[in-house]
Length: 77
Image (cartoon, rainbow, N blue to C red; front, side):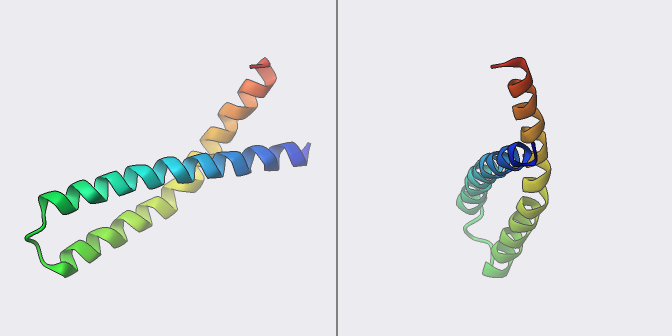
């Protein structure tokens, strides 16, 4: 049983890492494209903000994905 939960958590962690990473890259690129004229330290601060938000968001989203995977497993989908 604990193996199954760990397996679901690792899958959820991977999926949430990929989703949050792609969204952060997209947001960072759009921000960079619109604000090229701003100083380098402003861009660096925004990058650190994105990284901190990712670090906080990935585990929370992974638990949500674990819940969804468990529900799918119970329902047999």
